[in-house]
Length: 419
Image (cartoon, rainbow, N blue to C red; front, side):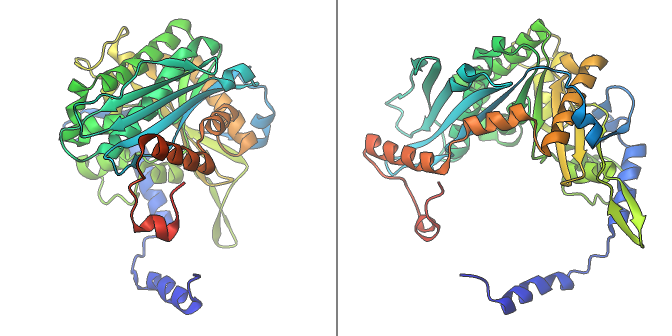
């Protein structure tokens, strides 16, 4: 039912009761202060570097139309993504999720596109049974596997099956087809499994899985192997983050420095103010949209970014210097749609200036043309996605094979199933 206009106005009018007089220009001034005094490097309260420029601190800009017409630095690019069903609890006590990973190529490689890696992760409280399987082939060039996990407490089941399915499928598929990538691989999202790493830093219950779960160990090994395989071949590996949700910078400014009140909810808000260009027109500021802007590259140890580069980590078996696995990133801003994107890569690649510049030019050129993610990322996203109709069919198939029903509540009746 549509909200009655009088009630819409009543709700919207609540904004008038919020006495918040901060001006956008104040936030921009604060962002400039951060840029000039806190990011070269950004330190925590103990003096440890959280963020440090690889080279000099700099903001750059490029004409959107001109770079869209330039020849791209990489003739062939590959993308990787994994789509999931999303965790489903069933009345027989099982909780499961399915991930479906695909690699794309631009220009297209149909044989590669048809190959998939599928992982079904499930949790049950019944420790007498193990539903896990080894890898098995299907449909020629595809593989599938079931992983079974038990948790000591009845919590986090949905988070666990989701992360295990997603990251095992993604990392396995990337390694399986690494030799098909000749010039550049761009992951859809961060370069490391941050959803899984979140357990290590934020949950004492889930931290135990880093010691006890062979599946977590396999995932961590896969991402280490992925960096090493591409570094050995001299082929750059990066990640394109479409939705920047990190709070590492603003959290450090708020908790660890004398900066003062921090007006941004997350890092994307800060970088948007730093990269947006405006001019005064008839007394009002208007956004300039003719140029894409970007930051220099930073080395980050903020939040979960520190994990893969920890010098004495008992969870990682690395063949390169721990420094080589450090997370580095630059931030790209597209003013035409007011969007912030983040490009991540391990330091082993971005330490080289020429490699950094090639990655930048490739991403900027494609963002300029597509007004969104690069083609390889968008194509991988399409290939890996489990659409609503397929999700519904899969759930019904699981209900039949498990001889049970989805464990739903009234919202499923009120709003319909979430697929």
